[in-house]
Amino acid sequence: MDNQLISVYLKTVLNLSDGQEIAMKTLQQLVDSKKHKEVISIAPHRPVFDALVILAEYQIGALVVLEGEKLVGIFSERDYAREVILKGRSSKTTQISDVMTHNVICGKPDDTVQEAMTLLTSKNFRHLPVLENDKVIGIVSLGDLAKETIHYQQRLIKELESCIKN
Image (cartoon, rainbow, N blue to C red; front, side, top):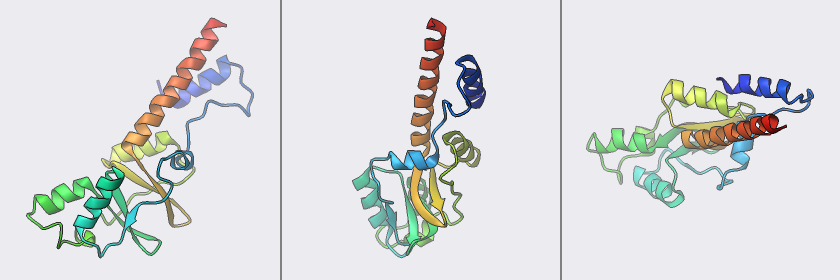
């Protein structure tokens, strides 16, 4: 059953008023709740090795590539595997701009977790930068979205159980 349908059902069953809702979080809320508040990024002229150091240091799988504050690409572990390792390139001499994903799909702060999950899975991506007024405010991963979906469904189950008990 679709999460939105469940939410409408619960709203009806629990007799919630129009202002009340068991809502799925927005990307803004998800970004605000992340451990790293700053946008972790790299410049396009930097060597891939530098990106690998940052990925390892922060234990993340992708970096937004910024020129100043402008998003120009995204670099992920997949890019490293496919564009550096498999092609026999050196991570110390290859620049990020040579191997990054250039055409980046982005989310908006008011997109829901479900909308972002649908976008990522349909495009076969794992990381989604979130832009507000052409500025990157954060990045969410498929793992972040999956965790939040699980929490949301647990809240729905708890509400249903509460309804059944009453």
